[in-house]
Image (cartoon, rainbow, N blue to C red; front, top):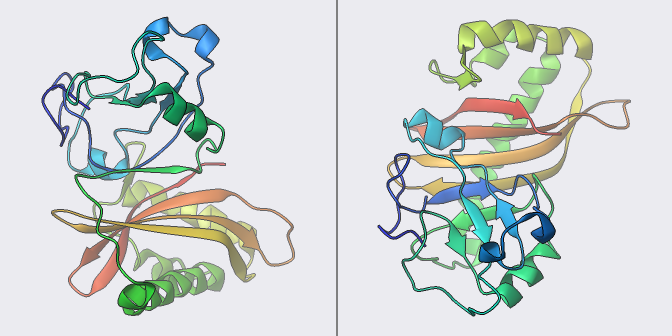
Amino acid sequence: MGKSGTEKTAEGDLRTPLGVYYITSNLDPKSLKDFYGAGALPINYPNAYDARRGKTGRGIWLHGTPPEQFARAPKATDGCVVLANPDLQRIIRTVEVRSTPVVIAPSLRWVAPAGVQADARHFHDVLQAWRGAKASGDVGRLLAFYTPDFAINGKTLAEWTPVLKVELGKARGRDIELKDVSVLRWTDSADTMVVTFGEVPMGARTGPVKRQYWVRQGAQWKIFFEGVIG
């Protein structure tokens, strides 16, 4: 990992970011220098949660080592995560661009499924309530699920509202189905959910794949970012 450790906050700080990320591309090793070994998998740092907190930087990859070197020292990169080439090759064979999550954390705490059922059930109900609001065609009801400081590509919630109105107009009050839902929770100074799903209007065969970032504010979950990824 980074020469200065983890918790990246700024361009050039030589730190590796912590959080939930997604692989954005799979770079052909033939297009890379030997330095990167078996290949490279860029991730989406800074993600929407990073941007919300003012974090900067770019070019964070998972990559391998030079052919003559099995492993790097524990802290030897400018912020990337470096794996031994055999490990990276195994990962490359299984990942899907924009879909495979990369969780970078100081440690993992494994819990029994029963231990998270209550929280999972609560958030499932919140997500279904958002789905119901989207299907209702009522923009006021839908906006209640978004934070006042919601932002996407420089647009505020007020600037994003016309986009929501267009989406509601196209749906014409039809129910929607959320397909292949993925929910990943990340808790540090705030409690967040990264949610990915296919949004398919009733009667349609396909729909856009969306990713939302939710933050817990008191007892409520609110969306602070929402975008189409496929």
